[in-house]
Image (cartoon, rainbow, N blue to C red):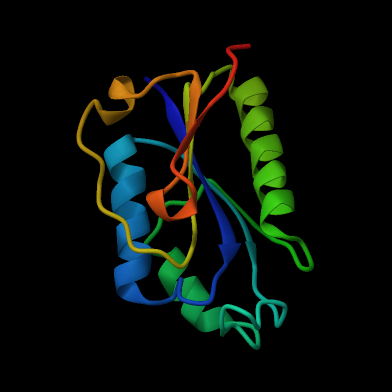
Length: 143
């Protein structure tokens, strides 16, 4: 089962080794390409990024994460970033003549564990899954 990873959000803690290592661990365990649409500016004062993260720190972190496509956008909310990432994933599918069964969204400021082999095969394909701290899961219609 083919999957892709969309990394969307602010990069406030992406430069922390435990964060970028956990993101790479998930990407590797899914054997998935990673597409990133992130912000690095002073627009996230609510969550704690009052200014841009140092480019050197980001470059060091990015050297440890295999990112197929990295886009930095300013002034976009999480839904705009996610939609932009979906557009990039769809363009990749057309260009490479591949189809992803799942797209996993990660944030660039979270800690993650690798997923067990075959984990995605156990999920219901008519359901949109969210983390437990953001409302659980929602069933959708098959298209």
